[in-house]
Structures are given as structure tokens and as C-alpha cells.
Length: 283
Ligand code: SAM
Ligand code: GLN
Image (cartoon, rainbow, N blue to C red; front, side, top):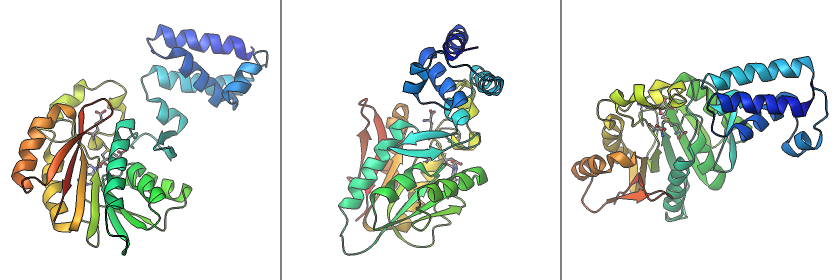
């Protein structure tokens, strides 16, 4: 068989299983199986495909048709322009979470420049937020915590790949409990899906670890525990940035209103115009 024929076969197989971007995904599957970039793939349609390559493609295609997210199959996801290794058992970083990085960077740049910055990323998963912040703030030390051993291992691996293991300190444990000192910024994309909604999430999302999604009965249990811990750990002038679901903006406002001083917090919208982050400053 030649590349062109295998590409067409893969495309129609994906399309007949209802995969929306069948053409794009077929390209990605082929590129991985035969080890070519896209322009080489298209400039060599007559190239014969080996049996091993066909088998490798067959295995990946079966996983994809079973609904497994593509980043688990290819082993990585781009986040804030950086390549993050991911695998089953670890949450796949989302583009909307880049807003948290932007907000934390703004906070960091508003701090006095005469002392080193300390940041905590709570529920770090692959380490995506912690690593992006450390990469953009050469003067910062970032503590990254998670309760999942798989996440901790992956975050450490990603720190090494980006040569940031000296400034991103990955610690296993609950919320801010493992963080050994006061910090200037607490940032967190922690679980916020109401428990009863988990069975109704899209099939792909249900491949992700439950402890990455489960925000308890109302979806707010993690942030409810995090706010008092953050207030106890934040230095004066620092801030808290937490990802929220736009569908919970009213409940988040009520919660923040009872736990944070009046006027100290706001909700920030994402590029789609939906409230996506709770931002609070502490004096
Ligand atoms: N921050 C990463 C990102 O944006 O890609 C991962 C986000 S994922 C939605 C939430 C993460 O929080 C998971 O890795 C999960 O294991 C972790 N987690 C859940 N409960 C936690 C807790 N009590 N303390 C620390 N981490 C927790
Ligand atoms: N964004 C996730 C989703 O797709 C939820 C992430 C979270 O709970 N922090 O449902």
C-alpha cells in the first residue's frame, strides 16, 4: 500500500465514525505512524507503507475511534507555546487555561521587583501552568502541588524536559498544604465539575482522571477549601487566580463575597467573553 491510499482509507474511517475533523486527524495519525511532517507526507503520496507502519497506525486509529483524546495517543499537548507531555491518568491542558497564565504574569509584573517572586500552582496536573510561569519569569520559584501520583510524575518529567526542575518544585499533597513558605501568587485550575454532571460530560473528557474534574456536589468544594488556605499563605500585595466555569459565575460571586473582602475580587472573561477566572488581590 502507498501513503495516499492509506491516508484516504484513514480519513473515510474517521469520517464514518463521526469524527468532525477527519481530514486533519488522518494527517496527524499518518504523520505519527510514518514519522513524516505534513509537507513530506503530501509530497510523497507514492511512498510505500511498511507493515510495521500500518500496524502502528491501526493501533492508534482504534484508540481514536474508541473516543480516546488525541493528546493521549500522540503523548503531548501544546500549552502557552510549550510542549507538555501527557498520558492517560493526567489532565490534558486546555487553551482556555492560558488566561490564568496571562493573569498570573500580570500580577507578577505588578509586584515590587526587589525580591524574588514565589508562586504556587495548585492542582498542577501536567505542570502546564507552573512551567509556563517559570519559563516567563526567570526570577520566580514556583511550587506545583497535586494529589495524583501520576500528575506529580508527569509534572516532574515536564520540568526536566524544559530544564526548569531547579525553579519548579513539584510537591504531592492537598491544595497548598505542602507549600513550605508564603507566596505572592496562588494560581489554580482545580476541579470544578459538579459530581452529578460527570457521567454526562463528552466521551473524550470522560477518558480524563475523575479526580481532575470532580468538584464535589456543587462543583465549588475545591475552591471553597482553597480560598482560606490561600489567604493564610499569600503575602501582602499578592493575588489569587482560580479558573471557574462560566456557568457557575453567580455561585462563585456569592462564595467569593462571603470569603473575600469586599472590592478585592473580580471575575475575568476569556476571549469568548465568558467569565473564566476569579481574580483576587490581598492587601
Ligand atoms: N492545572 C492543570 C491544567 O490546567 O492543565 C491540571 C488541571 S485538572 C482540571 C485539576 C488537577 O487538580 C488534577 O491534576 C487533580 O489531580 C488535582 N487535584 C484535585 N484535587 C486536588 C487537591 N485537593 N489538592 C491538589 N490537587 C488536586
Ligand atoms: N475544562 C474541563 C472540562 O472540559 C473542566 C476542568 C476543571 O474541572 N478544572 O470540563
